[in-house]
Length: 308
Length: 270
Image 1: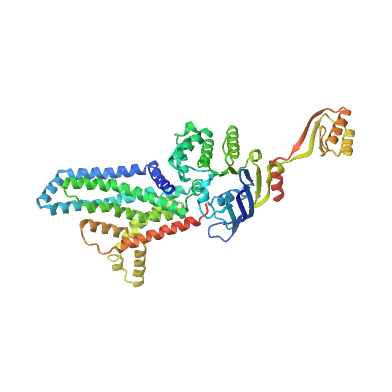
Image 2 (image 1 turned 180 degrees about the horizontal axis):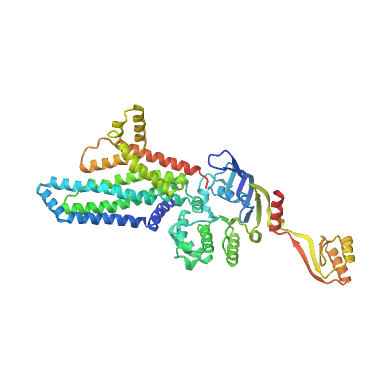
C-alpha cells in the first residue's frame, strides 16, 4: 500500500517579489512511498528536496499535480494527526525547556495532557535527553536540539515521519543511535521519509531512494539494486614485469593500474581462479583482492555529474 | 484543544518575554500612585468637601478620577501592549518555527485567530488587574460603587484588538517587529487623533471639497480609537453617546484586516 503518491507534481517560484521570472523547483515529479519502508530522497543543493517535503506537509503550495497521503488528497489538515516532522534547522521557542517543547508540540498534534506526559517520558529516554528535560533549550547544543527534534517528531506516534537532515550536527555515536531509532520505528511498521546529505547513512538505513536533480526525478529504486556489487576486482600484488603485464592484458583482459595493481572484470569465478593460478605460477605475491562495490555516493556523483 | 494550546502559548511567550511582568509592574505602579494620591491630605479634604455636598459631589469626584484613569490607561497600557505584542507574529514566522507549526493539524485560519485571541486576552487580563484594582480602591474609599467604570476594560480591549489586527497583518507581510510598531503608533497617535479633530482643525484651513472628501474617506475607513475613547468617557460620565458608528466602523476595519491577514497567510509559501 502506498503511503505517499505524487503525480506530475510541479512547483514554480517567482525569482523575486513581483517578478514574472519563474524558477521551477519541482518538475512533473511522480513517485510513491510504500507503507513501512524507509525512503531516502537525495539530490544536490537546490534539487527541490525540501520543497517536496514542504508540499507534502502543506507548508508550501504546489503549482500543479496530485498529492495523496494515506490515499487521500491533502486538502485538509486531518492527515497531519498521523504525521511527524523534523524540519532542517528547526527553531523551537527558546524560552521552553525540553519537556515543555514536547508538551507544546504534542498538544499541537491533538494529544491530551496524560498522553503527552507518557510519551514524553518514553521518548526523552529513547533519545537520551531525560536528564536535560528541565533545562531551557537555549542552553542545548546542536546535537541535543536534534535529538529533541527527533523525539518531538515521534510524540504523536505518527504513521509517517518526515526527517529533514536528522543527523545534522550529531556526533558519530549519536548518528548511530538515531539510525537505531529509525530501524526500530521501521520494525514497528512506521514509514520514514528521509532527506539527508550523508549518503553513507542513507545507504545504511534506507530501503529505497529517489535521486532528484533540478526538480526532476533522475533515478529511483531499491538501495541494494542501485549499489549492487559489481564483477570488478582490484588485485594488489608484488611488482609485475612487463612481460607478465602483457600476458595479463592479452589473456585476461586486465587493466593495469600500476606496477603492482591491476583491474580485472569477470562474472565467472573459474576465470578469477585461473587468473590467481597464473599469478602464483609466475611467483607474484598476492597482497589483496578487492571486489568493487558501487557505493551510493559513487553512483550519485556519477549520475549528477552526467546530468550537468 | 489545539486552538487553545496555541492561545496559551501566546501567554507563555508573554511570560517568557517578561511582557506579563511589565504589565504587572506598570499597572502596580499606576495603582500605587493612585493609592497615594487619594490618601494625600488635600485629596482626602476634597473627598470630605465633596461628601458634604452630598452623593452627587462624591459621584462627580469619583467619575473625574475614573476619566483621568481612562486616559492614563489608554496611553500607557495601549502603548506598552502594542510594543509588546508586535513581536508575536514575526517570531512565529521565523524559519524552522513556522514550518513545524504548519505541519501540525491546525488550519492557517485558526493559527491567525489563535494568535489574535491570545494577544487580546493578554491585554484583557492586564486591564482587569489595573482597572479592577483602581475601581475597588476608588469605590471603597468613596463608598460609591460605580459599575459602568468596569466597562472601560471592554472598551480598551476593543481598541487594542482593532489595532492588533493591523499589527498582525503588517507582521505577516513584512516579518518586521519594528515596522509593526511604527505603523501602529503612527496610526494610533498621529493619524487617528488628527482625523478625529479634522472638522475643527483641517477643515477650517482647507475648504476644498475634494480634499475634505478624501480626509473624510480615510476617517471612515480607518479605525477610530480616539472616538471609542470618547464614547467610553461618555458612558462613564453618564452623558448620551451621539453615535456608535465609530465602534461599528472600527470593528468592520478589524474584521476586514483580519480577513486580509488570513487570506494572505493561507496563500503564502513558507
